[in-house]
Image (tube, rainbow, N blue to C red; front, side, top):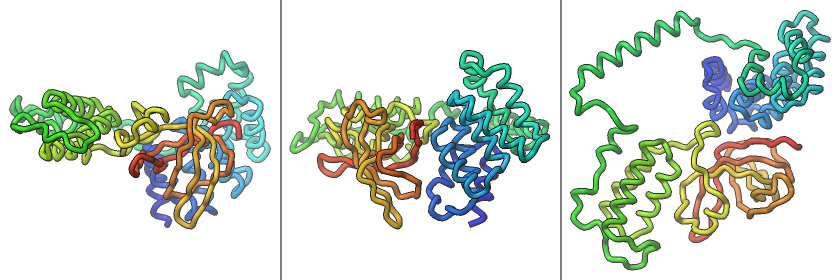
Length: 354
């Protein structure tokens, strides 16, 4: 149990905030009484821009250890990023009450005396300078980092120089770069009962497009093109090559998610989007919390209470504090069963307003 917190602390101190979140967030049930757990998770969320998650977790940390100055300083920055100046001042005053000489709190109060209006505060928020008001976490000294980096660069340069020009890596994954269908005589099998009947030329174009998207780190688009081949009359050898690409595509996080699809796109043709990832906002409905799984319906687009795009069943296999009617943002994988779909949650953001 303690080893996970130790790993998370090392990830946080090393600036690997998204990895710390992925390690900790599924274990909310396990660490529900741990201040360190909620503090690390809240501060990591803050660092990646998830102010909703940061506030939820830091509030919980403070409920376990009231007036803890580090958590209060983190919560103050959450309020600053939301332009909630009065709440940020309140946090700093609470710190000063228990620690009159606290440098972070006094620096925050001085900053707000000069930059309390939104126009002057915005550059500080958008540039990330408000993070200077967070407690410092230990990192390797700059000298050590520079020395280590120079060694890595030098070693890389030597290896690169020793490679023949034709061997030098020019693609995200050499195994995927080597995939080809040019040696396959028959690209299109009999049309039969398939979703997409494609010509040889279309199959070649889609396969090349999937490789190009993969090389450009546009994984969601690559998965969609691979699905198009798997649902088509492409020959078994072509489909095997397409499935190989899938093995090299990792799950995204909030910082790496690209090319999301709308609810309307997925609902119009669910099998085409099987295994892709979506980033949808909405409100929770029909919440069911089990011992090892959480289920609810996401009212997509209804986070503002104005437009309902559709209802998506969501399944979480990690613990998180939720409630019916709460506005959230869900990052998850589309799972298709016949012509219907659900979303397997990867991560959750709590949105402001609750």
